[in-house]
Amino acid sequence: MGKAFDIGLERLVGGGVGEPRNNEAARLADSPSAAGSGTFYLETFGCQMNEHDSEKVAGVLLARGYRQVESADAANVVLYNTCSIREKAAQKVFSRLGEYRLTQREGQTIGVLGCVAQQEGEKIFSRAPWVSLVCGSASYRKLPELLAQLEAGNRRVTGLDTDTDETFETEVTRRDNPWRAYLTIIEGCDKACSYCVVPFTRGPERSRTSASILEEVRQLADAGYTEVQLLGQTVNSYADPSARKMRFSELLVAVAEVPGIRRVRFTTSHPRDFGKDIVEAIEAVPAICEHVHLPVQSGSTKVLRGMARTYSREEYLEKIAMLRAAKREISLTTDLIVGFPGETEKDFQETLSLLDVAQYDGAFCFKYSPRPNTPSLKMADAIPEEEKSRRLAILLEKQREIQRARNEQLVGRELEVMVEGKSKKEFQWSGHTSSNKVMNFTSRAQESLGDYVQVKVMGATPNSLVGEKSETGS
Ligand code: SF4
Image (tube, rainbow, N blue to C red; front, side):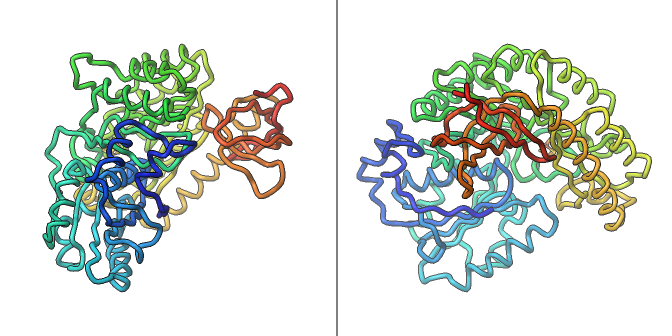
């Protein structure tokens, strides 16, 4: 959802917790060219990739001398980073753009970024003529050029090319979390699942070089970050474009070995490219978190074929068996879609039975929603909305009970937690375990956010653990 803050490059490079300083950022802050007087407001919707794209977009603007402000009213440039995962996303974007129009000041620039920008393209200018910039994520590397054109007085600029082999790397990234840094290592997707807009909106797969990723991780560690999350729509399809040809599992190990890094996460993995070498990396290196998000989408091979997921139920379950046999206990989460065109009651029952076998620790469950520019849009045998809702409710209830049982098995164990929040209630704190479970815990000590503590699990709900900081805790 929308994020707002008021920060300039001088704060970004100012040092201290949450304000990492790196030499490049310092050079930019000290440079006369950074002395711009513009302000920008950036609102973000959608997935983690979008959130992180916004951090980089903010970095591009800060490096040009813009200052980030917390309301659209106060900004010279209003940017709206959009998501098209939901049906009718475009209508919602236009209605939000309508709200911006009502408050638009003379000379204020409004820009649309992200998946809806890519999907709707220049049509946005005809439906919302007050918009000046339309740019999809595959063209973000052109943002400095597009901003320069706007600053020179151009009325309308676009970046809509998806035919690219370049990734979006920035000199400065404005990160929102002071301990956990997100890092996109692969952009786009080549998988072409029949229901998904990503190959259309984000373009083909492009990986960053391992050297550039590791350099950024070293800078992050120097700046005080202890956890990095490697991001990609299909993160484990990573293919190092440099001569080094580092495999994804080798990259995980190399990132985990950077001094100062205590936790490495990665998401989202595609089952087809998920090999034993990744499990072996998790087994061998404690800093690689014991959590894998492996979307299955359906338990029926017939539906998986319709979705063009490139694996069968049996092949997916082989991956699950491999993960469950690992020497470390790895928590598993997934994504599921109910009501894909042609999904029969038997297919749905196969999804339910897959939950019994997989025993997921968490699942994001959705009703199928037809999306523009996707092959499944034209598929026959649409499932009525009420039936989709019925199936979703059954699925959620079943998964809830599985999660409850799995979390209850952890009662009595001691787990490491990164302290991420303090409750209004006295002595109550919260954070995540290496397995990515939310832990709400009691501690009478004055904990520091970002620290790691040992917590004994005292109770469990389907969505979180309840604990007490161990006397022996770090
Ligand atoms: S793997 Fe499939 S669902 Fe995931 S981003 Fe690529 S096309 Fe979309």
